[in-house]
Structure formats: structure tokens, C-alpha cells
Image (cartoon, rainbow, N blue to C red; front, side):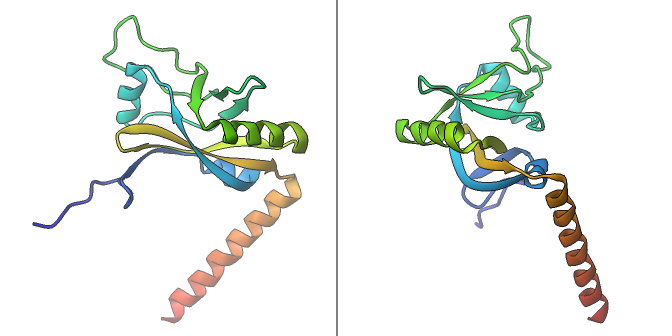
Length: 162
């Protein structure tokens, strides 16, 4: 009997919940990191339903060695009771000490931002992928849009030729 793949499941056993597509447009993304999330039960249930948003989210690394996911919106669980979670509360990230030290030094000295790019389940646990990003200015954004449009035109021309 052949193994079947679930819809939305990656080949490496990951199930994508939320992707921040806007991040590639607004930032030059460099190094990527994977971190575990400390979540409440109702947050996990809400994420399993495929709900959440990383549009205004960012990662904060403190001097004492903690990393936090800020302004990520995980809506209240619809079947929860009065003990439901706050949708935009700060959520602690789980990283190795070396990674935390490196990230703190990078953010403090180089003036970069830590941008969440994906939220997914891996092996039944919620993970956050974030990248070190440097903000693009308006001209860079226009250039990115021009490249994307030119690539679409090339693909259309090649498709019509076939």
C-alpha cells in the first residue's frame, strides 16, 4: 500500500500553518533560523485549524538571553472557554544559547530585523522559521516588482511558443 501525503504537508514531515509572503518583498533576507514556540493549549488548537497571521510580527532578542515573537496574531480558539488566550500576546521562542548570543550581537551592531517567515508543525510541535532581514527602500521594492513582471512576461512568451 502506497503512503499518502496529506494536503499541506511537506516532504520532510512539516505541515505549513502560516507563511509571511510579504517579508520577501519588504526585506533582504539572509540567514534563516528555526525555533520552537512556547504556546498555550488553545493556541495550539487554533493553529491546528490553520488560523494565524505573521503580517505585523517580529522577533525580539533581549540582553538576558530570551527571544520573543511579538505581534503575531493567533485568534482565540472558537470552542474555548473564558480561559482563552490573548490573540497578540508575546510568545517565547526556544533557541540554543549560541544562536541567541549571535542574534543579539547581530541585531545590536548591524541594525537588522528578525522577520518571521513561516509558522509550521514539525513532528507534532509548532516551529517558527525567521530570517535576519535588512529593510528595502522604495527603489529596491520597485526593482523587485520589475524583475517579477519581466519574469512573468518571459514565461508567458515561452508558453505561447510551445
